[in-house]
Image (tube, rainbow, N blue to C red):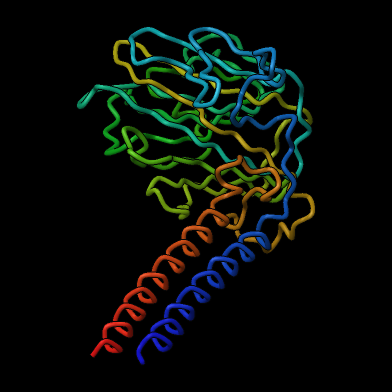
Length: 317
């Protein structure tokens, strides 16, 4: 009889799949013990039952799709939009995960980009990718349009530090106040694009990018001994000029990493806990197990039916 051996083989494969899934989930949980700071995090649904945004103020051309995105700018020329946290955050040991989407119809020229801000005050509207040209704190600019004759093969992601006395020069993309940066393709990508920023006071700050559709990050920059203002507002701004793109912020997760070993831990090990992840991410493991269980039951039923049919046929002869 072949049924028992086939069933045992299928059972072994099924058990191995579940074991592997749970093992991976356990490993992720072990790496994901940093609590989510919900007061400053953005994730769907973005509005409360009264259709209010209690955490962030928005303005300019920013629109909110209740469960899809904050769109800083549409794919039209001469637009500027912004998002600013309503309250200040005290930065010492934290990380943020940003899921964003830059997309548009342009194939050769497009822009201008969006910026993520950590500043002592909320910025007004200006030419630093939608924000004013002077600030006290740090801006990370995702600049998709090259000014000043630069010939980057891809978009420029740059950290710009300012103490409030320097002025961002749009003509050269703020090159004179750039602290660090990298070049990477970040627009018109079919899957989720992400950035992960980590800050450990007086030790380092780093930025990693995930643009390949997998959970794989590449380092953009790492700067030793950074210093942010004692209290900061989180903000996002976006801008289009003579060229355009849509700039969407899909998720912004802030984590307290004060309980981690910040001296030895790799920046690539940061994630949020299962408890605070959006519903679809929480249920991915359960869904996989259910699909495998259904596949196992259907397979066994199929072979069982064939076995019973064959046995009955043999009895007749």
